[in-house]
Length: 86
Image (cartoon, rainbow, N blue to C red; front, side, top):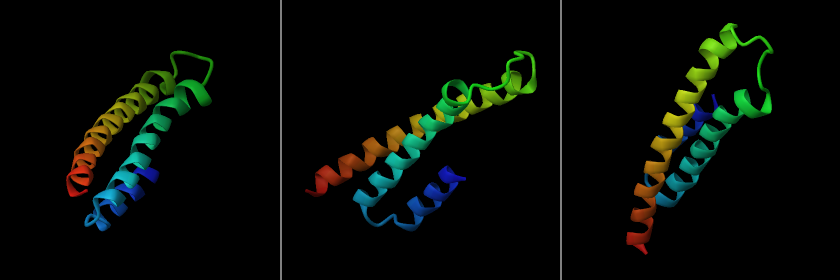
């Protein structure tokens, strides 16, 4: 939900590159949290063959990596715009 809300606000405030960088940093950090919650913060159930370990953890990890990579590329792209404008 947080990533979706930040993504919507990213497209609503698309006229200012500095605002886009700030929102994208929020998406980047949320992507890191997506990976940390199941693996480090909460951990999951103790039985390794249940659905949380077999399905949910790999899906959250892949989605988290995808979000971090895409937002990292977006940050670098918009930082170049900000630096070119100054």
